[in-house]
Image (cartoon, rainbow, N blue to C red; front, side, top):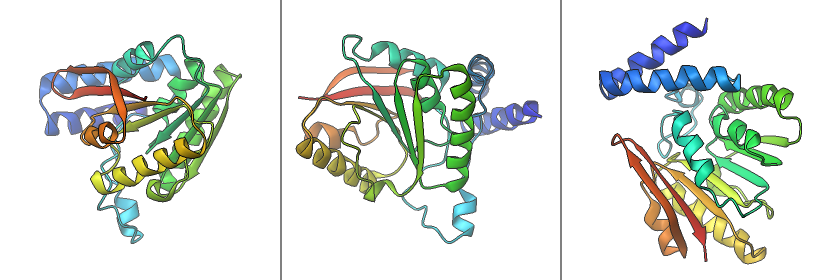
Length: 223
């Protein structure tokens, strides 16, 4: 039952932060999951990948971005810019992908190196497809460091999915895609620990927000 998922996640939040944050977050989780009809709550230490001998030393724990912050981010995206292809690098269970479909993106693509999380993302996107029929989705099980950015992607989402080593490779891949197919692109970076890599690559920060210490996000766009 889903109530056990909420309890487990509440305890995880409480152990890692405090009671106030845990209570605030779990209320947001329940409201958002019910509103969008998906199952993305929870934290995953990626233990199944370690057991398979897959190197997770550069990855961070799976934890979904809060619904409240996602809603604000999509409001802050340039409303005059008709963006169409949303790419989530480190997509987890697909929460951001599902919300992007609800917000009008016609193509959403998720990338994650955990097959289990990719399967969960595909399942949630299939549920979203029943509500929002006018979009296509793809979920790819691959390593972000070697992933070639599709030429028509115009919005990329990142929730601090990995360390500086992998992120530097992702920034290089984005730069290669822009060089081969010049276009405007927005980067949504939640918990932007390596934001300086994008700034050095020529991106400008067009919006930034930080609430309750841990709800931090940035939108960057190329010149």
